[in-house]
Amino acid sequence: MSLISRRSLDKTFTNDGLRGASLELESVSKTYGPSTAVYPTSLQVPSGEFFALIGPSGSGKSTLLGMIAGFVPPSQGAIRINGCDIVSIPPYRRNIGMVFQNYALFPHMTVAENVAFPLRMRAMSGAETAGRVSQMLALVRLDGYGGRRPTQLSGGQQQRVALARAAVYNPGLLLMDEPLGALDKNLREEMQEEIKRFQSELGATVIYVTHDQQEAASMADRIAILRAGRVEQLGSPKALYEAPANRFVASFLGEANLLHVESVTRISEGCLEVRTPDGLVTLVRDHGRHHATATKAGLTLCVRPENVRLGMPVDGGENVFSAAVQDATYLAGSIRYRLRISEATVLTARVPLRTGTEAFAAGESISVQWSPDDGVILDEE
Image (cartoon, rainbow, N blue to C red):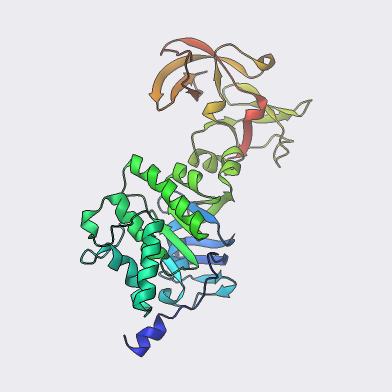
């Protein structure tokens, strides 16, 4: 290897043991002529965090990942790894590992040679390279597979090789762009556990892009939900699910019953009375949100399907309505009902399937209810 190429591959940032790097974005944006792909965005990801970026197609998540990796130059802003601004540093000197959806393995190389490739490019000694490769293959549970070609492996095994190759040189950050998109459902779920275990054992900082909300919720410590180049909300999966910032977040992360609100009135005992345009009146606990004390246009009532109870009313009869069952769908471990309360209001309920669970058929009239604590009033935007 030439002196120039050796220098170009020197690690600009060193990683201390098994500690991942911290990442900070300060007012980072990307424009293409008159179009804005990412509006000014600021994020802080501490060392060792598993951080997910999710959003619909065109929301800017891959552009944001590309700016962190160095493949996409930002139009403005700072990107810092361990406090050092890396915007002017080329991708190959950022000490960042990448895992792609299509694995990007070299078909003419063995598994061991693929994993060793980043170390060879860094001119590491043969003995140290062999030791590192052996350790990484053991970590991804591919001991004994070093002599095989990628074409001799399953999709899940190839993805494990890609993980090992991305982490073998102990990068400060691991960036993963839809890494499980090419796998079937069962294998995806298995690999979610593998990636989380892998990240935990390495102590790595992971930035994970996916379009699968459930995947992000099951793996990430925190999630940023993007729409049209902006972060709509950032927080833990639990916080985003239970206290979404607006209608978009509520609908994007899991199922939600979203009812337009015509008016909100404060009443006694910490509750609000909510009226929908078709006259449906419900009680909602006042959680102290900014819009909870007065009538305001552009509000939505959110009730999650698992909080809609069916059958005999309980809890003193609050928020009890008659409904007609439109259809019932059996899912893995639950029954999903669509229930018509009025001409304009159709709710979804999801009931766990247990021994003795009463099932309702299409056309039946039943009672539905939810607690005032289970409703949340949201801004439309």
